[in-house]
Image 1: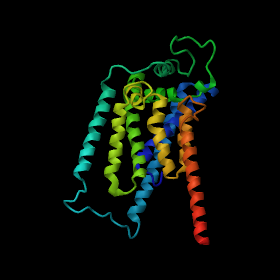
Image 2 (image 1 turned 135 degrees about the horizontal axis):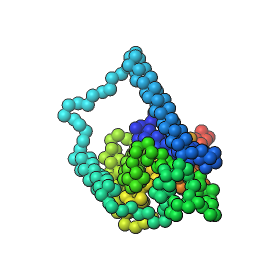
Image 3 (image 1 turned 60 degrees about the vertical axis):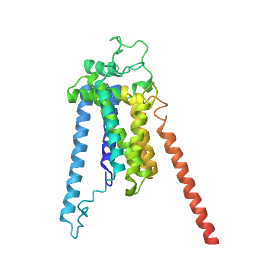
Length: 311
C-alpha cells in the first residue's frame, strides 16, 4: 500500500474483507465446506494481511530512521495554525451533520427491511452452520432452489463471520455497527475524491465544503426509499448502499488519479455484494466513461503537440 493515504488503506481493507468472505462463501456453496472453515479462512487471511502490513510499515520506518541525510519535517510557525474562520465554520457544520447522522443510526428502533432477507439469512447461517441450507423465513429446505447469481453473493457470509468473531448479534451488527462503518468509509471515499477535485493545499476549505455538502445531501436525501441518504441512514448494511456510498465515489477518485488497476478492486467488490448483471451495474460504466475521456485527452494532447511541431 505504498503511497496510499489512511483513507485509501481503510477502504482497501474493507474490500479485502469482502474478498476473503466471498472466497469462504464460495467454498461453502461449491465445496460443501462448513461455516466454521469460512471463519477460520477469514481470520487467517486477516492475520496474514495484518502481519504483512505491519512488517512493511516496520521496515519503512526503520529505513527512515537509519537513512542518511533524512530531512526533518518543517514545523509550522508559532501562532500560525492556518485555520481560517471560514474553515472553522464549515468544519463545525460538517461535525454537526455527522453527529446527527450517527445519532440517527444508533437511536432508531427500526430499520427498513422491506424486500430484504439479509438479517434472516445471517441468522440462518449462524444456526445451521451452512449457507442457504434452509429458507431463512420458513426454516425449511428450499423446494425450487435459488438462482446462481443470488447464491454467489457473499455479503451475508461476511456479516455472519463478523458476528461469530465479534460475538454480537446479527441485528446489532447490521443495524448499528455496519451502517456506522459504511458512513465513515463513505466520507473517506468522498474526502479522497475532494482531494482530486481540489488538489492544492490552499483549497482545503473547498475540500471541507465539498464534504459538508455531501453530508447535507445525505440528510436531505433520507426522505424516501431509493435515495442514497435513506440507504445510508436506514439500511446501511445493504450491498446497494455500500456501492453508492463507498465504491462509486472511490472508483471515480481512482479514475481521476489514473489508478486504473485498482479500480478492478471496486468492480470485483460490487460483483460480490450486488445482484446486478454479475456486478456490472454501476462501477463499470464509471470506469469505462472515465477511461474513454482519458483516452480522448491523450489523443487530443498528442494531436495538438503534432500540430505545434509542424507550425
